[in-house]
Amino acid sequence: MTVTGTTPYRTLGRSGAVVFEQALGTMTFGKEADEETSHALIDAYLAAGGNFLDTADVYSSGASEEIIGRWLAAHPTEAQQVVIASKGRFPMGAGPNDLGTSRRHLRTALDDSLRRLGVEHIDLYQLHAWDALTPLEETLRFLDDAVSAGKIGYYGFSNFTGWQLTKAVHLAERYGWAPPATLQPQYSLLVRGIEHEIVPASLDAGIGLLPWSPLGGGWLSGKYERDVPPSGATRLGENPERGMEAWKKRNESERTWTILDAVTDIADAHGATKSQVALAWLGVQPGVTSVILGARSLNQLNDNLGAVQLRLSTEDIERLTEASAPDVDDYPYGGPGVGQRHRKIEGGR
Image (cartoon, rainbow, N blue to C red; front, side, top):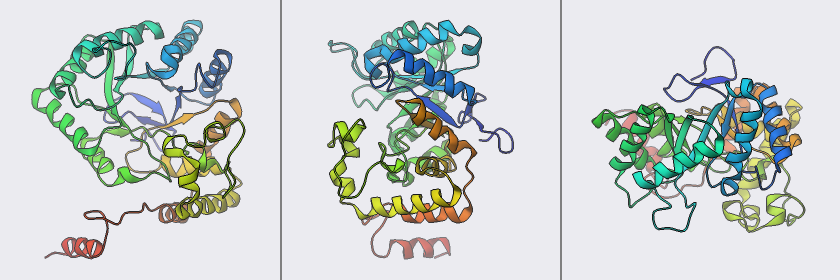
């Protein structure tokens, strides 16, 4: 929810905490950005009005949290205004209990994150992914206890499906535990699959969405050209086969270039950059609370922050939405007759 008018601040889901509409993601801290650069990124982000830092215990094997912790210690006044989010779930050790969302692991993971950050309280603590082995009741009870103990203010999830999110919401309600506030999904003009189930589930529960990879691993910044293998100091230049961002698959998809053509035209019309257009579109999607920026340099960060000032027209948003429509051919989301069936249902049987 937007706080007032056109202010760039929004509430964190249904909570009363207020965050900037762009969060500073810190996965690059300690790896792609050294400590000096990382601290400069925080300074620039706060100078632009930002107040929301997102990290995780596994980012650079704990170094990201430590770098943030040293910045917080050196800036006690500014630190009072910063909303800190971190995550736990993945292995930080080699033992069989050094991963997952069990009470045993999360207790250790949370205490270790507090220590690395040098704080007594984390505003938003997130489960980094679903754990099929641990009963969800055990996990949610731990999070409720952590809220009661004052170790965390709110909790959320990352990379959950719609049914997983809905199950957690209803279990918390059933037992009177603190409800989840947020969900971090991958979401961009290139990746819109969450709109089928996850977005509706989040809207139904009042969950705030915190999209990660909003530029599709750099694709939406326009840094890659059709049929030109990437090179140089970019993520795909360093590793063209990098996960879901892999160059070959996206290069061969006509949808990728249709989206980029639309982004380019709209950017040119506004005198904006492609990144700013992609971020501005995402920022106005239903349920989105704060878009997580990932930057390895001040130039990248400053460019992305410029999206806050960009106001796309209804026509711009419609063109981007149409150009990026996800490829869905199968029931129940697509395929012959599905759209007609939905129209009949909406109009009455």
